[in-house]
Length: 310
Image (cartoon, rainbow, N blue to C red; front, side, top):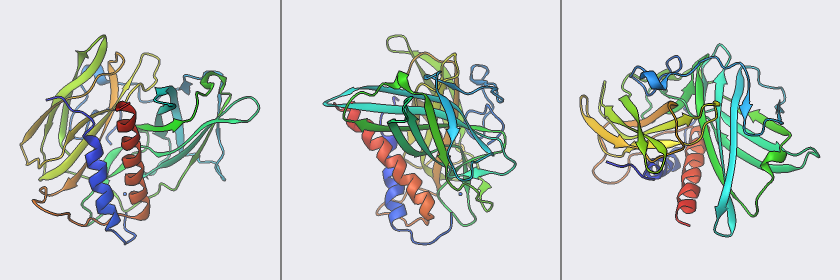
């Protein structure tokens, strides 16, 4: 079964749930794990301790402009690309974030700026890092967290009125938002994710695999995969999405869309506890920051879908 852009339905559903929330409650195994509950396949193993920052703008310097700067998080890769889309340009940014601190980092927001030698801004983004599924006591919707030492994928996009000189980037500024949520705990019912890299289309690669229910019933399941090229740059965000109920021992087969050839990737899983409601929506309480993260994902997917339709 080929998965398409249905992942926006997950974000849209969570957004609707977040709109009903009004309280202030909120939220990996060691790299390179490829989905909660599963061991990495041989071709998915990734060096967990990269020594240098890599980007498709090698002349650029990475600068933390937070006040104060954040010492427990480190952006380890950046890949900014663009392409014509109608009468605009569709910008996509892929990255990886490592938690170099001693505490869990959850719902980590990131503000990015790309500047030329004169300090002029070429592009800017506000987004959130992905991660493993965590949840606060009494919660039902997972939130992404990054364990100490772990690396997580990031993706966002935007439309620009004209092409920007990406190669002219000399400074990449980064500022991180609050990310300390000590009440969050790793979930025990994330689905097992088994995936294999396969040939796809004209010289591309994709992932084919299965989600298997573990621990308890869940629904609205999304797995985001972040393929990397030989240089360590993330080149895509691929998805496996099951909007229905997944019971313990139940399975869901998926095949992602294609991307530039890859053998390495990371993965992040999200879901809602329980069985999918037959009618209406069930209110799930999310904090303001969690609701913002859901809104961000919905916006990203809306732009992805708009660009694909052009």
